[in-house]
Length: 298
Image (cartoon, rainbow, N blue to C red; front, side):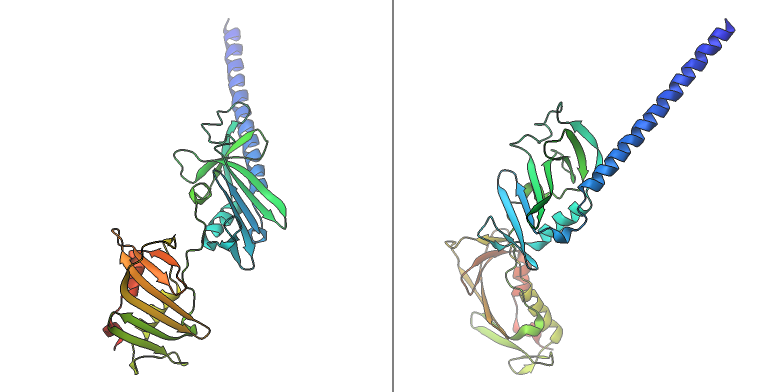
């Protein structure tokens, strides 16, 4: 009787050990599969990507041209490279966290992977598709998304997927002006009847209507003008009311103009450029463009 009990206990121990070994084997195997899939999903050379297509409720077609990007799906206007860099940097380091489900049995609607709900990300180089992913955005999105290769059953949990892929509708470049300090010859500032002109000499010094000006103040103002961004673009029929502030920037190659308009309830401000384009700028930019003569005097 005692021997029989011993054999039973030994059998139970052996079964438990076998179960542990099997679980570990399964875990190692799944880990290897995930690692292999991660390698397969990663884009090794993001700089080779020259076209990005993002399709959900709408289709955004981004095409690399020279050193920049343009939106082919919106009259080929300039696209914001910073947003695109975020996508390409993420694609270079996709991380598969786990196998989330089998598409044959999963509730694809809850995973937002049905044909009407999923987001399709396509990366191309020289006319060839380098990668296509079907992506589903969880309700509690934290940089993690469901991912599926086209017409394959396995659904992965993928990290880190930029929210821009799911939510951004405006990929336009929001820059208004782009120029360097050394390009500037003069900046004429008008606020009603208050008018002054900053002049930059070839040696980098500044004067204010012929008097010595503070170099740091003049260059900070120039830098703010040369890196001016919009919050959003405004339609041509926007009711624009000038505030009285008008700035004329004479560069070595061209002349730029801007006029500040009325301020909105959230302290954003309308702005019109010399070519009659209208923008909305943040209150921080408005503050940087509202100047007094004394700010530039030693």
